[in-house]
Image (cartoon, rainbow, N blue to C red; front, side):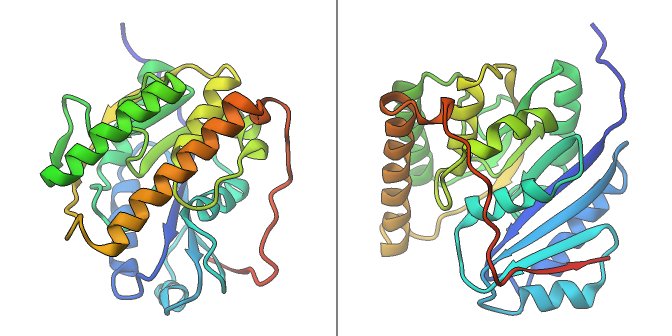
Length: 264
């Protein structure tokens, strides 16, 4: 069976936090990949808290097809992604973590899988058999444990909900976005849970190339992050399975009052 060939406009969202030294270099790498795929595109960067000069660096770089949004106070990665999704013009909407742990060449891989499977959502997965992953053992153990927790709580068939690259069809996001609540740690999972509950079950995994090394799994910041993800996951379960919140509640996304916008 040959895949359907069609041409779409892609919106790629890149959440940014404390990356003034590397963000322009990283964006240039991403744009280099986007320039050779068979889709037109836009890049939406969202600076999640003007704690450093990331916004200023992006302004100075004047990168074509890039829009940048920024606000003073840090709200969380999931909030930044949701802001970008609300602004996206593409009929394919993606997000990619900005730290370059995930090789940006994975972008084209996910888009091709979207076409091949005629999918609602394609999830970049560390556990795909074709993925190339450099991942410390401690992180692997935690990731495996989180997979079984998610499987137990939600029954989702995806093996990796947390890798920072995913692509969605626009009509899926239009249904899902008004129901989202998470701002910080478990937004990836919440999107998948809500999409599944609304009947968007054509969710598949694609391979990625990832080089991620957690410096010290016993450090205070790492332990706190793990705890926060666990708490947010339980909150999603409570809203989904106890309150049945996602099937009935809709809300308008609230933009921060101090929002700044820059675009080329």
